[in-house]
Image 1 (tube, rainbow, N blue to C red):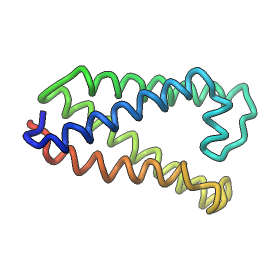
Image 2 (cartoon, rainbow, N blue to C red):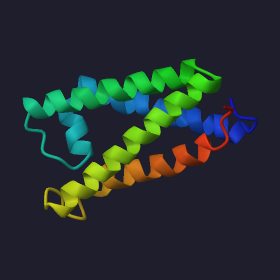
Image 3 (tube, helix red, strand yellow):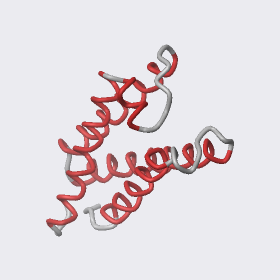
Image 4 (tube, helix red, strand yellow):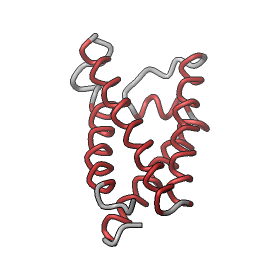
Length: 126
């Protein structure tokens, strides 16, 4: 845990957000795709959303149930995923898979999570 209650709340909020996003992606990939400005075509897309969903649920729950070095590891894993998610959004936008107007959630959400996660990670006990 951090010595700063704001850091603890930030880490908990990021974890809760992961759990909610993960549960939505797992249970309703079509709604999740639309929320991210993507086509909800089913099949393979639903499979990919469920992969994203379970990853976020596991990282979120692990973060909330851990402390010390384990919490730091979960926050670091979440940060790595957020960096990858943001980079994937940028690549998709550059390749024309998203327009600037539809890239909002796939790029902005991970960028915000990276900023908050990196800030919090600096304050978490080693």
